[in-house]
Length: 134
Image (tube, rainbow, N blue to C red; front, side):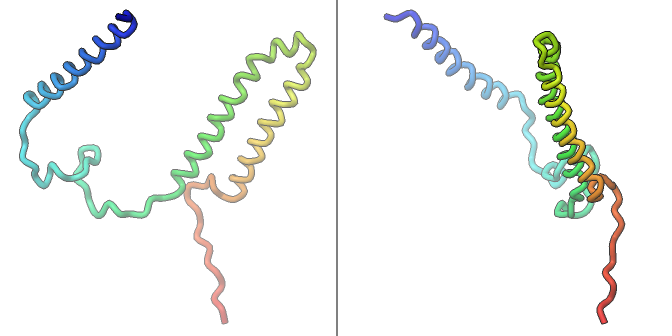
């Protein structure tokens, strides 16, 4: 018999015994509770929920998260190039590497300026009213 399959066999046997054993111990030790109104409510940081769960969620949270992710990914994309910058200086191609990083960061700054001009970075936006039609 091949010895490589013996270890896999024992791994499967131990797993087949351990999983039902842990589930059984959990079933014996966990408290048995009857569902109550309080127990079936959504957990909101220890506070009693007030009102409906179907409320309008402000889109500004998503915009801020997307902008954060863009600049977080920018750091992850620039870091490998920056670590190789010393080798680029030694090989004489430092200007090209610097221009590449500069162009990448400039495009991201351009995107940030676009978001800023559109007003996506303003937390409280003013409401614009259209002039009444005659």
